[in-house]
Length: 417
Ligand code: GLV
Ligand code: MN
Ligand code: MN
Image (cartoon, rainbow, N blue to C red; front, side):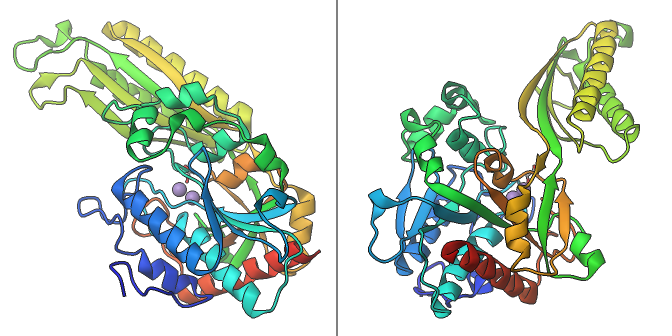
């Protein structure tokens, strides 16, 4: 045994693999896990992944975007000949206070599926990679699916290098401190051209499978979603000495923004609008704030509906700010259009998972970014609570095993056809 568990984990067992990392990145304050990109816990998870991949005889590389690739090559091929590859995997970073399944379930299941395929005597005719994408949650630098966006060339490297975390440190500084070279980030069309399919297994973030009483589903679509940074500036002053009529209080405007977002999303059937993060500057009980930063997350199947909601909230915030003597800027951090996963990939998966239901999701995924550039599909595993981005997220041992079986069936089909 080492600190993380047995030196060689049980083969084909994603439950055992997840148990090995259950102690990494636990958050004593929020509960659950806090595993931001380039943090010590995320580094430990990368080390764990590399160890587990190497012990399986996979060849591990870290690309310029910090994405880990663990390769199982068909006999008689080597790295330069890799093409027509099948890729599976997910992410290991988490939101603040998240669960142990959002991301890690897909990584552990991918490693376990390699074992299952070997136990079944599958001889791939093309390479298989297990990939781990960094900063999927965007919880450190604000842009979700940052690794896959860089790979796909849909975010500019200069913009990424300049992104800052909560402490004001740039991606360039933080990534360099963690041992990565920020000069190397950016689009990698050659790598993408060598991949013929990507399949991401993920814990379901909802109760679709609970309601259907089924363990595993295929993804139909990901609804459009985006993030907007709202900065409201006012005038800091004394809580006791400043008359109410004389205030330019940005916290009052932030409250208007939140109220407006709730009202605008309620007015659109099945829209989602969230403010989950607010920073008040300077943040004292007896201090009228000088500024508030808050972040809106808005989602709907219709991209237009998302933009209409954001425009309406922005207009209401600006009106309120003007009457308070505050100023507002609203800037888009990231936007992901609605993704309909490729029907031919879904057909390929359905040909082996005959009766798996198809479910849409309100959660974003690297698979959603990659769906634009390579044939992509997703599998979901039942989550009894339906909750995610909270320690209440869960998945049952039998369902996890069913997910590994389903992923193995799908990969066997894709690797040998
Ligand atoms: C990622 O899980 C997201 O949907 O925000
Ligand atoms: Mn995820
Ligand atoms: Mn997530």
